[in-house]
Image 1 (cartoon, rainbow, N blue to C red):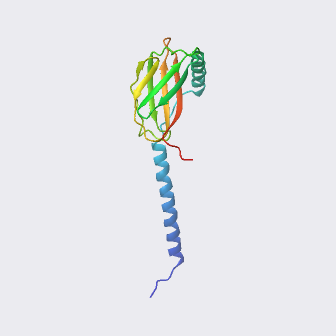
Image 2 (tube, helix red, strand yellow):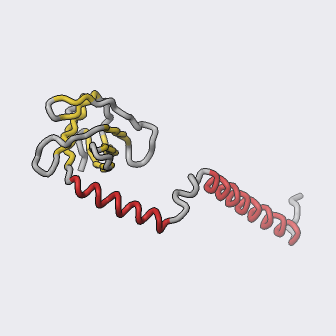
Image 3 (tube, rainbow, N blue to C red):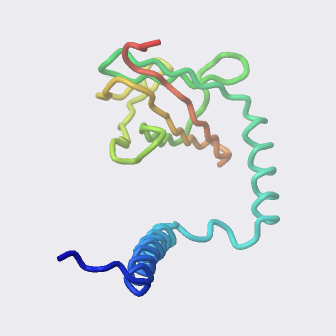
Length: 154
């Protein structure tokens, strides 16, 4: 004989359902806060002043970066305002996907004939090139370049 559904049963089912929903929400909130990287800067006003000063110094360099990737080698042409090779003291490059860091690579560049060259293997798709170069006077030049490698499907 089937059991009768009473008000007490309905109350317990409702409380259990809401308990599960609240439990999952609390779990997800704890995970989200636990993976948050934290404070970027203590004082955003001071950081903005540094940003403006660094941006002005970088713009004064008037450098342009032109990447080229042939499937095996990444070539970077860094030029000054006159189109001559820029006087780069140090160069650091990270090539990675825009959505995650699993495939990030830091190629080692060699300088020859006015170009920086590094062997590189990339899977098809969208890649970001994060470049940091230092000028002889210590000015930091930063640029992010979006680069698509492979066959685009439209």
